[in-house]
Amino acid sequence: MDLEAYLSGYADGEGCFCVTFNRSERHALGWDIRPSFSVSQNRERAQILELFQRTFGCGAIRPDRSDRTLKYEVRSVSDLVTNVIPHFRSYPLLSAKREGFEVFAEVCERMNRGEHLTVDGFALIAEIASGINRTGKKKYPRIEIKV
Image 1 (tube, helix red, strand yellow):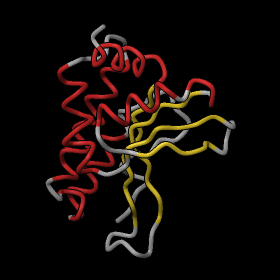
Image 2 (image 1 turned 90 degrees about the horizontal axis):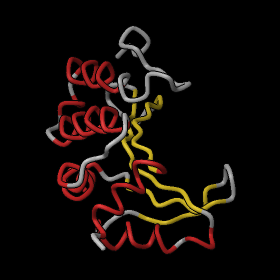
Image 3 (image 1 turned 135 degrees about the vertical axis):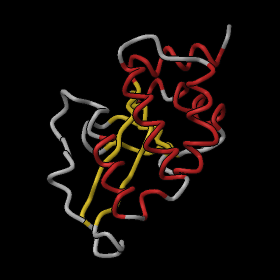
């Protein structure tokens, strides 16, 4: 079995590429950007989460308070750029989720270069990130995020 292809297929159905924005007084621009890749699963099937963690060599498995499942999550921009994104570029997603992944990857790569630390870079990243999940509840169009 090709484990890497299996993990991509699994993530295509059960994975989530997400970028959240939170107001933050700690950050110079007043906002914190948090990209993350995650996969949730019932406790009795935690082996798949352990496979993701072993294969990517990063991330953590934790209880998901919202629905009593376990969640494997990678939030470090460096780990996302070094381990997660290259995996999905080598073993691409086959569904429409691939478009969201490409937007997610661009956000992470821009953050890895430090572009989020400037007003213009932050605004561009916020605009780009709004394309990850156009049907989702949370949208952050450029007009709403004032830095």
